Length: 194
Image (tube, rainbow, N blue to C red; front, side, top):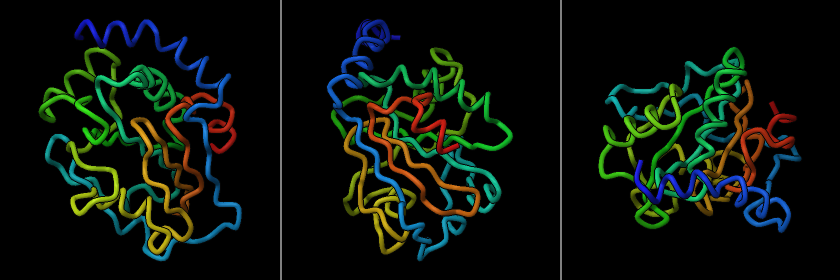
């Protein structure tokens, strides 16, 4: 862990408290009309950071939390709680991390470094995909194209606004929520949605 990453880990609790108090990066979008996806969530795949295909068809009957991540962001300490959430809700929730460098130089150079960093510093055992783009652009990851296009997911056009935005899919492949970066993995809004 670099000096910068150590400092971030130390000041994160203060950052989280300020975010909550001031309402910074705390927006939540919900599928209030229970809109169904136009393109099936289960038709999606992703390439894991180990090169294996992650077939989303295998996530039927589980909730899925998709998170765009970065190794040197102020929100990087959320990896701790994401791992705890993964362990605590293992039987009904799958978490998948999508490393990205879309918000400045905040991600490691390659997938092996990212995986090692996450495992060594946060004990991450949930799947990570290959580093990719999550914001709207030609090279946007196909999963994030689905998450941020209402013509695919049925209602949401919100791409990630920063690292550690979270999208929750229900047991039937319906996008339920978008949670901004400041909403922490164990915040009431996420736990209630599980």
